[in-house]
Image (cartoon, rainbow, N blue to C red; front, side, top):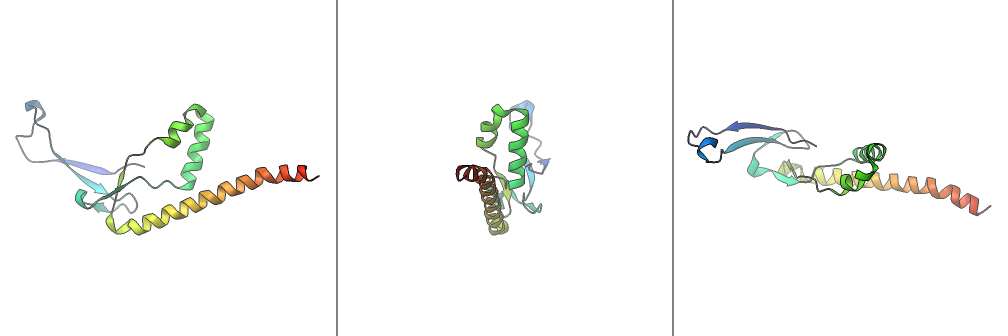
Amino acid sequence: MAIDTTATPTADPVADPASGQPVVVEEQLFCSLTGRPIRADEAYWAPPLVTARELVVTVISTLVRAPGNLGHVLLAEQPNVPYAQDVRDQLAARRSSEQLKLLVLLLVVLALIAAPILLLALR
């Protein structure tokens, strides 16, 4: 998930990379959930929302292309992205629904694996 930013340098003529002074850059941040522009001091920084579909597609494509990288892809820390303060409840609800989808998917896969084994064992 990418952060949409538009960098505009400040008008301070003293801030110059050649003089060794750091250049201060003001960024326009956008809420990762709604896409609305927000100010940096109002932003709520949290890990990105990963949908169950994105997770399944990532796992399958990683297993096909480079199975050795699966642990790194799943366990690597993701950078925080900005969210508007007023969408925290909506973000929490979306995260809960994505977790529920993933749980149901895992239970269906477990049932598909366990059902033939149980049918063969009870024969």
